[in-house]
Length: 404
Image 1 (cartoon, rainbow, N blue to C red):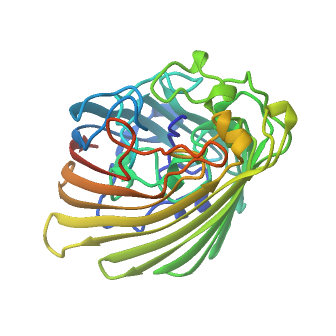
Image 2 (tube, rainbow, N blue to C red):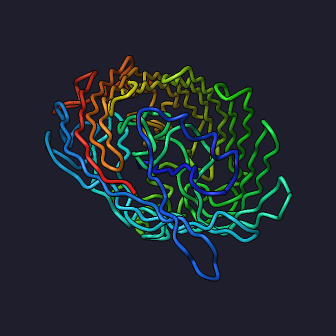
């Protein structure tokens, strides 16, 4: 199983629709770009950040669902990213370099930040945008963030450092071409690229957003493979090296799937609430060793509140997810998140302090398995703890960082 890392392109002009993917943020204010003189290139925007965190995991062991760690307590560097953008004129660009790894999905072991997750190494994002004067259309080409879902793979874009199971199964950075449209309250983007960073350019994504007013907006997204991505294609490395991680052992169901989802953003003063739903299915495919269709459903409600005239805010979410895998495919290791046929509920709460470019926050979360029995005829139990016998797991992080 691999952890997907995704970036929301809220600071760039990839598409106005991508801006809807960002929060009507209260609990965390992201980097504020520094304007610099780019000479013949015109005005440029420089931004970035660095952060780290300590963590606590309740009852973990390599025999459970957190492979690779026997440590209950540890500390990691989260991100070190620098972004340079040109956001005006007909020809625009974004280049973001550094190391990413700060968004930790509740129920998974935190890992040290790395530049080896993607095929592009330390190039986290790099794309060129053509924006004709007076036209509602733009075109972007290069390494970009996906159009899926509400949460970001860069933790300071989220109100919580801990992310949901919805985020875990989504596509992250990929290479491709994207057509964008923005006119009045409507914005939309369509991207064709190599979903899950596989190098196979057969993955279609779409995001459409409608802003009813300044406080209400609806976003609907789709992602799906137009063909087949074979078992030997490379994909996100998680905590390893991209060149040694392939689709087969990581789960061919991820890239060879169809996904649909939506989220609604409501803002009332200092309060922002966002409900989200997402459904993903991978059909049976003998060439991919998938005997029957396998699916995953997730729902969550995000909220954040900023306390007026103070540097303090509070973010949180609750989630539910369930997946369905046949007994034959379960025996082959097919899974979406935690385990085949896993069903769970969870929550996360994050009080945050932020003063200008400095921030610190604590995140506490708990995940509880409603179902931990593998499909028949396996019938084995899965879970957390030393012998994978525990239904629940508690996680917490203490994070601090500097943004610019």
